[in-house]
Image (cartoon, rainbow, N blue to C red):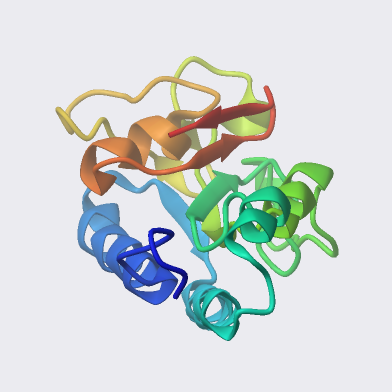
Length: 176
């Protein structure tokens, strides 16, 4: 690894997030479709790229500013091979055939997609509940809602992940 660039591997980061999601998701129902195995493979590739010396530290920072950083996206944002239901029962078996532009850009910047998160139907309601995946619960008080639109995204997991990169593609917001 390049000196000063990283003291923890991408694999360790992704493994930590996957472990945490597996631990808390049964309680809050935030992640509705995962790609953990592929994410770990991509994390290994990120570590190999860093260790290879093919790119300088400056090149990595310019070309891959999110290299090895895990992220999730809303179910309403297409992620190839993952369910893309929009919270609609009529789309309960629909999988995205390609990545949305937002996901493409994040991946090109080196970020690693872990999966998709719950939303209200069509992102239109004030709480994150739909008839496909059910309700996402507030991580601070599971008797309450997390709110709507991005309920399963940053709000649902942030408390448990101790700082993370979240991409909320509907409004183009990156949260760390």
